[in-house]
Length: 433
Image (cartoon, rainbow, N blue to C red):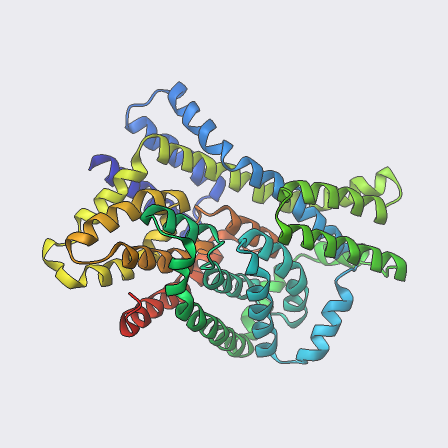
């Protein structure tokens, strides 16, 4: 139990620090876990091994970020997205609601492949310039993408559904069959959230103006200097590169970071003819890349220490022991309302391979089927997966959108939890759960 208490204290403390903005995520994810491991009596050599194990799980994603962020950043710099932005701006006019609803529609379609990373890579570059033009806060963009991904990630080829199906020993399609009505409601809720956000942003334009006022004059000048009119043939060549890249992402047979390594090299070669121009273009993207990658690798420190010290497993045991033994038929309802908040502080593998078996075992004693336990945890996890510091794709999303971790968590978590609880209530009313 001591391990579970320390693990929860570590994660909750990290969340509080992030939300209050007292320390950078990089510092938080490195210092706190190391201190916790020292408290548990592990030697520096052992802790080093834990860190190496954890960071190895985030390295591939970090490489993806190193190449994908400059890829889209350079495309934006040379003005590839300008025609799309102008077209969408004409369609939406001055309608904030049209822009936010469009965001959900694009994100929903883009996430048919079940990958949050590729969805962020497709949607943010397309929509962020419009948000800037209309002075809609980027946290709205990240919230709507998080909500859309959470709903669409319930597909049977999505990682969470496959993990849940594996744990309870059934086919992923069987799990998804129960979830289809919830997905339909989820899409409706995501569109409703988009409408609410559009209306709120129209009323709170001063907040947006304050946000964009933070952009320094030098940044604005640099953006004006970088953006340029592309010759038609170069515009179409760049668009072809983007379409091929997106096609390869959807195909999924080639590692994402490999796709972006090749894409970035070709993009640099096409748009910048000299070494100096290519180096300048990369340097311009460096600050955004460095911020995202250091946070991601630092999160590997947290993951490694939590897993290797067995704190994650003990946290799951601890959470179940605090549920009163007399809950009876309300066990699944209690778990349903706890699932979203729990998912914020658990990594995906620990959540499904560590927590789900425990919940399923305890649930059977209360008359709750393993399928119901799996559905409950799936709904909670997917609703908040892109508002969890344990999810690498969240850092990619925020890095592309230029949103601080604390701002996203403060803004997104309340809305995503409300959606999660609506799903649970709907599941109980309809008998799905």
